[in-house]
Image 1 (spheres, one colour):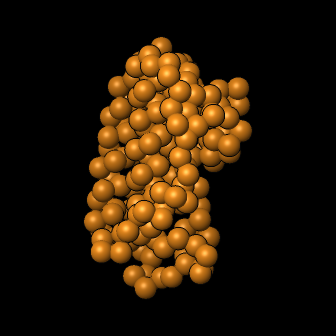
Image 2 (cartoon, one colour):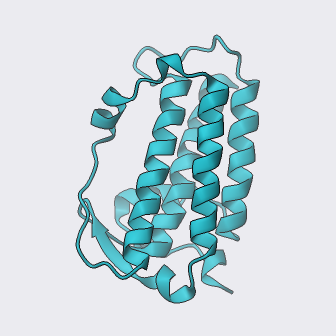
Length: 170
């Protein structure tokens, strides 16, 4: 079985990110990423336009913008280490980033289109990596992980938000 079909072990990931990785179903990670894109699009298109999250929660638009940001970041980390870089990368504070996201003027269709483009870029990157690249390791924000674990974290992070939307809006 190829690395694309095998979940990273806990030894390849930090406990924080392994929590996301555990949310991903077994199987071909590239196919999972494709299916998630369709799932996000279908789920959010079915949510009523006026749906409001709990007062302390992010709006749908904020959460979707955050997903695109996080996917870009995790993908960059994977690329950085896949190409043999050894310098550690800094971490990120999602609340600080969220405070700077201003999707108020953007529509849900616009944010969905952006997410689709980000996801397509992730799929192209991940599908183009060879087995040696998937096994490279590197540290970002104090989390030492394999490239494969960074990639599965992309799917796991998205699954976390998909699960949240299901719980809130369905």
